[in-house]
Length: 115
Image (cartoon, rainbow, N blue to C red; front, side, top):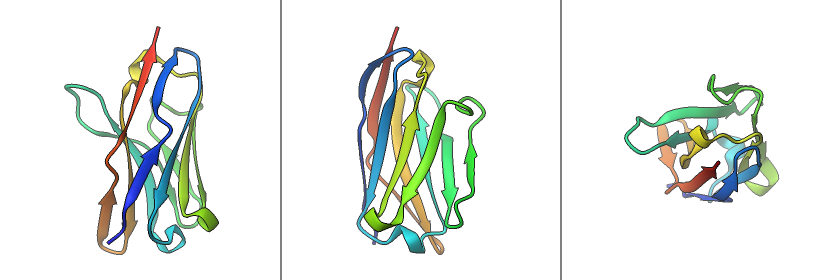
């Protein structure tokens, strides 16, 4: 069982930046992939960004060029740097990770972007 704990969410003005962190209770070096998803009110959860064990990254179309996912295996932490934030980025952001056939999710952290 792996626990994922997100932090770093909050209220920010449009155009601003935030960095989310996801601390894992297990070794992320042994994970297949780690990722960030988000869910806005009334909308489906969507993939924001993901990073594989080899360091390959992928991003949702709406965040490409603005968000960057990274990982620090020594700290068992995954980050999401969010720049040029827009109101439509407002959502609960969830961290998830895959270890073999198991998938784990954090409880989420709220990001609110005001105009």
